[in-house]
Length: 379
Image (cartoon, rainbow, N blue to C red; front, side, top):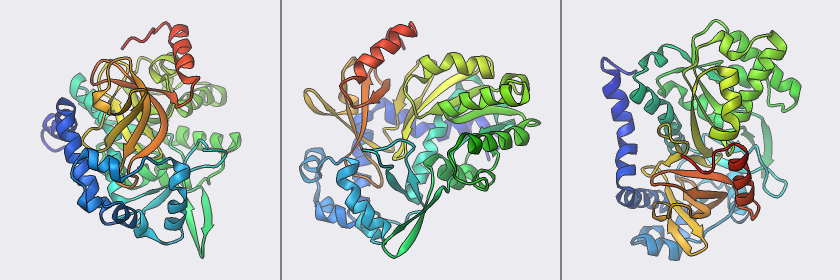
């Protein structure tokens, strides 16, 4: 897949990200134009005049910021078959959140365009390879600890809709387009069912152990708590740590705050002297990833449109000052001006951290974690 010149291939795969980070204003203008073309093909976009919008301020006037609760009635209708109400193409799958919103899991449609955008999660690994020169990473495999792509079915209207977790759906549909093989295959994980008990997870971990124990695992990607839980399971069930089996080069993990501080000591204790690279993503999309040794993520300005609700009003993400906080509002191929519910902290450009959910206590928790880990806000 990488051809005769792996370095040039990896460089070309990363170039759109590099260029967007170098000029985020121009990149975001281009992204908004592209997103509006897709919104104009939907009933929701037509209702808000997407085809007539001329620039950012017009977009903000016409499209309201929406939470999941506010967009949920439309999503319910899409699940019931009114696809073009919100989507410009048919969904490939329905992703369910691991967390909850007011006690209920969120259902988010995933489309072919959306899935192609999620390949950006691989940028953390690719940039590690490019900067370290460790192209031998591609000779190994990615330890697949992702959640199932099919968990169950829900009846909406007259039809049943399958749903699963976004990480599993992503791996199932796009792993063939990434330069490293994932083991176990997502279909093997799905075959174990969608249960969430300790016994269900031990079955998945046992599958991963038996499939990978004789493989060269150079990469671990997925969810940080699951990666640590797997390492502890191996010690408990098989008497070994991951570092006893493999010489893993890098772990690219997401889903929680504090991966580079709270989770890094456990990860290196379990997996050895690995490079830790944080992914910032959610069920709704993959929005950024760690670029280098600095312990923060860099946005995918070339794929998603980012605004932030701050104490001084609405800003573009790239307009935030170091030390400023706010609630992230994303526009994706599916969701226009969607307030995701995360609190974002701006550091030295172009670096950011998600410090937790958008709640009053979050800054205090973040400050305490920084103190307890002796990080004190350092990159």
